[in-house]
Length: 299
Ligand code: GLU
Image 1 (cartoon, rainbow, N blue to C red):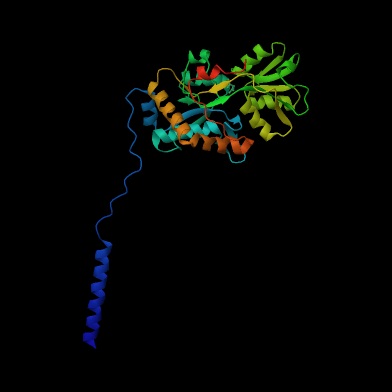
Image 2 (tube, rainbow, N blue to C red):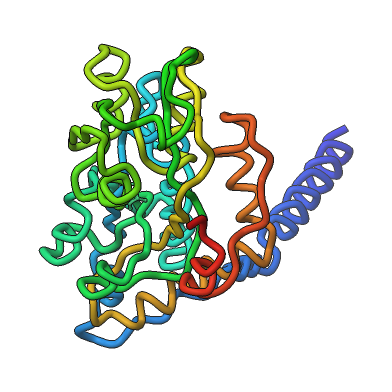
């Protein structure tokens, strides 16, 4: 009996030992990281400063549905511009969360870049010759066009009907400049933000709001009593604003925009941030230099 017990003890000990050996097999090789550590940009460049800081600081709108919108229900920023910013952070850090957003209304966009408040402006910003004298732009990432938003049933059907009427727009925007040229007899009142323009119109302090069609479409998607009229009377090619003298950052941003357009990801982002919310199917992404695009702009 004792012998039998000893035999069984040996069997148990042996199997335990074998189990242990199996458990302590060769140490598993750690998985190779999918992304190589990003290479550091040259010392003294803005891109290097961003890399060393560990996050990207972006100026976006907070009140423009579909582009830069702080959703009061989720307390999260959403929209095409916000998504584009995250793609750039992904490119720099391999992590789309390494980004801090700051609110940049239209008139603050260029000063924010010049005073180093933000690294990039992604804020429904049209590339223009005048602005190009002050800052650099990426390639075109979206093509909008100026239009009018009115309450449904309004007698205003086009810019020709604005004569003697009050139209709201935003300080420091191309919309303000364009409407003064295209409807010189309209009474233009200016606010800091587009949501203030819409509030003024709903409160009957203005009869129309004018800016880019896609901004107006965002407000119309939130308020079924409002509608766009008059079609497009300008082209507004959107670019990402970058402080002058930062070629490495311009190149990186352009690389991201090109990849998004070529890979189909641009369409995916459009569908999620704009298409599904406003019921607009994704167009073909704009290709080519903004000056070329402007050649076919409405006159
Ligand atoms: N895209 C125009 C601009 O850059 C109007 C929209 C805006 O003010 O953000 O001025």
